[in-house]
Picture 1 (cartoon, rainbow, N blue to C red):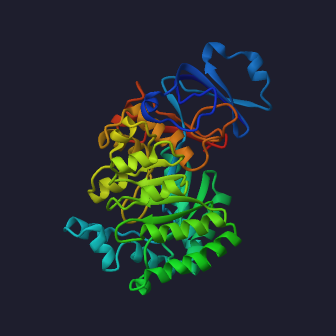
Picture 2: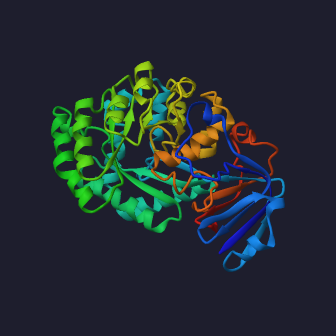
Picture 3: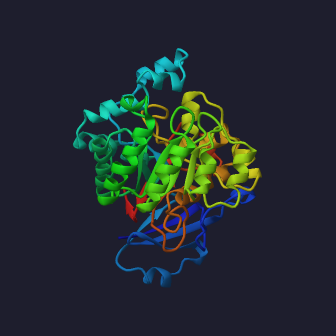
Length: 417
């Protein structure tokens, strides 16, 4: 199947060549074509340009029937890439949210068996089928808001059996969903209660049993560790990352959400694809990230929901760094996968220009998923993952109208969904 989207008011993030990511001042650069067309063939982007450049010869080169869609007054964006989610989980945690309102901190809730440990208990009692069905509904909702690619982490298992169960659910989602999905092994999401007095014993379990079994079944693309105050130390993190690398898993890290933990520096040292959260990021961390291949990834929804300090996005960009924005969709600290809202939060909470926020939720998050060559921009040969907006006057409406769904139609792998 092929589509011709014509009379597009603005074709956003249209690149003639593939780019890895945008950093520093370059994040203010958002290529836009006025009065444009977009042509797909099968699951790929075939061609695009100004309407005046669209010829019968170009259409004749497309195989099969071409379905035309008139996008007058509307814009076309590449689908969002959400490089940090925890959407395979059992049940919500709104009671803990009420505890948070009453004044308990994230750490206090975790210490009394809430938080991640609560989700682990529920997941243990839930079947793979139930986990798949609930995660599928979340994926459908995310797609309806314009997301076309998702990284999904394990980490609510906290035992070999249940971590493998989560990853098998993610594998099934990969096989069945039209979204592009990456799997991330996060056995080191928290220390289970039985190991609280000896967390190194749990680290040994991850290293000696979990990682080899995850690799044996080819269940994950990445390995992740919550390297932060109250969770895992830098030394423990390094041990787990080294084992993951040995088994072909590239690192990603939860870092500096609670404190200047050293997690960012560990991530850079081990060539992590991204370091995520970053509420506590200072000059030393920024210096470590400069020149690295590690994408700093901010999770606005978690900071908003938990009432935390905001990561210094402007300082990072002014220092020449790239910044990505992802949802952190999970039951405890961000029960939303709405990337339109994440984009708006980038502007409202972090003072990012709309152009910067679009780059942070498309090409930069595509890089943070290892998919920058196939997703994140409107480029010939990339996957035809994009959405058509409702009528809009300017791109700035994406940051401005934070409470409404601005997607009218969305396409994944060249198919109208």
